[in-house]
Image 1: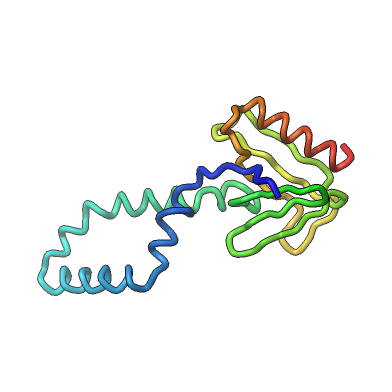
Image 2: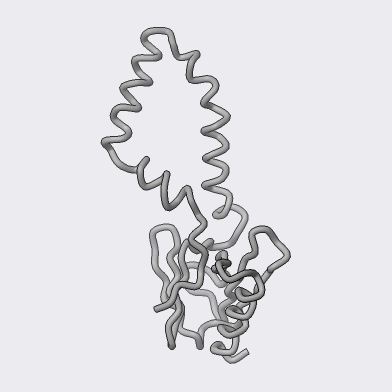
Length: 149
């Protein structure tokens, strides 16, 4: 299988997995309790905008894009989409079209299905841009040929 999506989703790949570990949360909770007990909770106020910004960056793809895919892999017969916790196998005969929106920043690709499955009928991902936007467009056009478009 070949990966066709961008790896530039830093919070999901770097920060969030670290924050999900219990051994990270225990010291944070203990530190917060100590700051509240000692009256030094005022030191946490400058962190609030930073935490809100990190949360907005992390949750924005899921809010703005329909079924945002972290990773998209392709082989000869199907696409493999990695959603938040799920993996979706989409055979090319189930895909109606794949469109490329290169004028956006970041550019994105949208997969539209012929019929909705349990996750919906539209999936969005950021294509791999290591070879440039024009190559990403060509890759999406090649995928469209596999779907019969």
